[in-house]
Image (tube, rainbow, N blue to C red; front, side):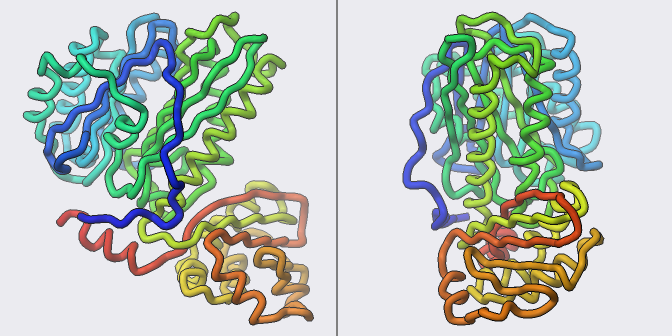
Length: 415
């Protein structure tokens, strides 16, 4: 499948710093993709704390089940060398008992390679659902003596986890903890099957900070709600969604064990920025996407209601296709608010496209100008403001338009 680079893609992949305590390698198995890496192997320092969020799908893949067990063990504090093995092209989902046996074998292969225990080896897979995994290429690749000779760059690691992505995605920030400078780096993949109820397709973030597992998990879960959990390409939740945050513990500051410790203030801001940046990049690579859409909902009965309304808008095929056609059809936004199931007042509803008020008090805004609003719809980045008029709840979600490119990609996905 030859995919054209998204018009919303950033110009270049960012420069991400090397982190002490993190080793990375990539390899090519050639199972689905040719002339590109499709396996990522990582090793984390023994001092690492690991947090993760997983898909809420009731049909998760075997790698999700396996990694959840690894996380449960890690919460108890293993103090061992820990690793991660990722493959792209086959999700190992709905593959029966064989799928569980295969993920265990993948974990064993990865663990032997990096000198870890099998139960300390996280596994993530992404790609086609329902096809058995061929472990032959994995065994050959991971048993090659040359695999560990050359460490991978962040760009190579980001490429190895891609499927229908049209560009590689990464972000970083720096912060200060107790007078010590620390870094946060992250890579993510995702382009379609994006409407997570926990995270995104696959995302891995690392910091050299020294933070306890409990604090790390609380921060990841909290910030996921307003980043990875506030985006949608197509309203479809993946069976493989996994996001991990690893604190390598190699920075020279004391262990932070309280989530409310003021020493974490800069770190929290930096982490939020990295997560939101990565989440936005997933949307900007939405399959067939031509427009990046922000929907800001205010005046709802609660923040939860605001999110539900926002997702109703961003997931509406009628709203998404109108935006793809650069049609200022605010009536479709009215429809999406009404179908959300949340409390709303038709005669208090206020809708604006960017700075342009289009609907007010149950009717078209008095100064609405079709020509001016239509010109705004031609821009790549659009902001829809929707005030419900019933309370103080607010939430912002992000998504993209729906074009024929989405149909082309997904109609030919297994070809």
